[in-house]
Length: 325
Ligand code: BTN
Figure 1 (cartoon, rainbow, N blue to C red):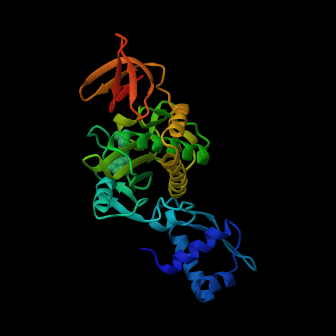
Figure 2: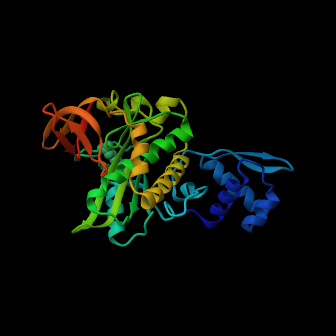
Figure 3: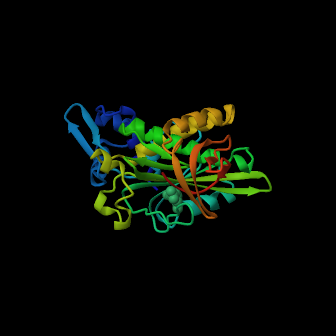
């Protein structure tokens, strides 16, 4: 937990938006002496912040460390609901597991669980998810929509759209979505999404949406078996990105789309998803746990389920699969 003083100091810098704030103003805002202000500024420097100090003008932050923490995410977060409660831990097994316990204990909608590192990150189809420290976004969101179980795949597609929009806005990259929820840049996976449910009969109690975003890994930092199929935003842009900023933008995009979904249904989300999808109208092979199906991906239905036209003309609904295009 960060001290209240430091939170106030970071908030003051965040509101100054890169402009100078005088030592006097800071000491008034956070209620301490000028000497204490100087000490806190030194503490920030030790934590990787770069600050410029100019006589008679004061201080300004010129560079923030790429650090994720509760405060880093909270300061500058523009959402009303998503991320208003943040559970941050440096190292966890899986943020999904923690989010599930919190959801069972009654966590409010919009709660997020974020970790700097996961030791047993979970992927789709019982795979693991490589989640090293200091480089990626490993986050689970808890939402409580009043929808039937069969509509929940729609939320995975909605999340994919939110992540693509956030990456586009911050980095100007143009990611593609491969059904249902792999996000690719130049054909390599940069984001994975895992949606899990807590439900009873046909009543959804909570949906836990886990998002893994490869942000600042270098190619050689990926295990060898992933180097040909995975990428990171830094590899694609050559720039180190602030993970907290990407989380904030992603939460804002998600919240907007989620409100749109709750008020207008899946239709507008489906249109957006289709505009980013690369696997539609192509011959594909869907490898499911019940065997492989080859055919033309003709679209998604109103539930978000993939429809494949098989060679005999029949339509196969695919709920969960790996897609080879
Ligand atoms: C996939 O297989 O494509 C989905 C990967 C999902 C990974 C994220 S990282 C945050 C959350 N916690 C987990 O253990 N998994 C998800």
